[in-house]
Structure formats: C-alpha cells, structure tokens
Image (cartoon, rainbow, N blue to C red):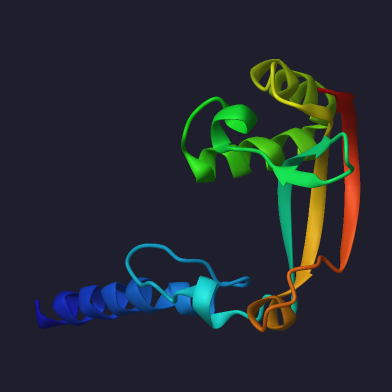
Length: 138
C-alpha cells in the first residue's frame, strides 16, 4: 500500500514541475513561470494604431472609441492588430473614418510604429520606423 502513495506523490510532483521545462515558456497552471517578465523581448517594441493626418500634415492618434468602437484601450489595440494580421486594415480604416466623421482630418492611416524601448523611455518619442498598412480619406 505505501508504494502506491509514493508513486502517486512522484507523479504529482512531476506534473507540478513539468511546466518549467516547456519551450517556449508559458504562463499556466499549476506553475507560473512569468515568461512575460523573464523572457528577453528585444530592444524594439511594435505598436499598431490608427493615425489621423490634418490639413497641416500634423499627425494625431485616434481615440479608442474611433478605432474600436468603445473606450477600452486594449480592445482598440487588439482590433488594430487583428485587422493587420487578417488583412482587413482597409476596412478598419474606413470604419474609423465613419466614426471620425466631422473631425478636421484629411487622411487616416493604419500603421505599425516600432520604437527603441530604451530610447523611448529616455524621451525620444520618434519611432524607429513606420509601416503603413492602409490609408483612407477621413
């Protein structure tokens, strides 16, 4: 009878420790390895968004309401990322233009900005580069 208890304890221990050895590491039950903090994500971060261009050529970041239809910032970001990934950035651009109707903007652009994270935190807010996925009239 004691052997069954030992076998059960060993199996339970293996199941608890097994997530540590997953590649790539991921955060899950029963053991959190916190990969979002422990994995090197590189020096450049990508930010997907929708920008407005006014008559003077100035660029404005749109609100979450115009981008995604609600005041949720994370939902707006996910909407832009999904549209880029699925190839529907043009449709998102037109939808945002409809929501922004009446504002003094000439163009909307669905873009990916890449930032050097260290430079950004040091005060340099200019992106390393910009990829334009879609452009439409506002």
